[in-house]
Amino acid sequence: MDELDQQQEVLRHKTFLLMFRILLIFGIPAVLAYFAGGWLDKSYDMRPYGSLMALGVAIVTSWTITIRIYLKVDKEFRELRKKMDERDAAKKKTPDTDQE
Image (cartoon, rainbow, N blue to C red):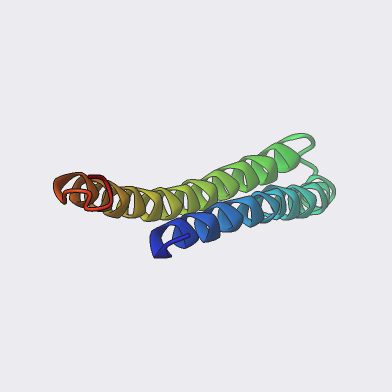
């Protein structure tokens, strides 16, 4: 494997690990929203609006973080794909000296 193929494998592994990170990105705010919403409902006697507001904030926060991560990883994949395409084009331009 050459360097670009190794970089591609590293990015695939990184993407797989990001899936677990995304689980945490959605899970932690959801749990916090559950408790914060319950506290808001009891403290300000605004059931169910406190829970709904906390859940809305958690969803917006989670999706914002997820989209930012996606854009970052997508940019890395596009840059790598461009390098790989350039490498492949350079291989096609150079004549193969092994064949006679």
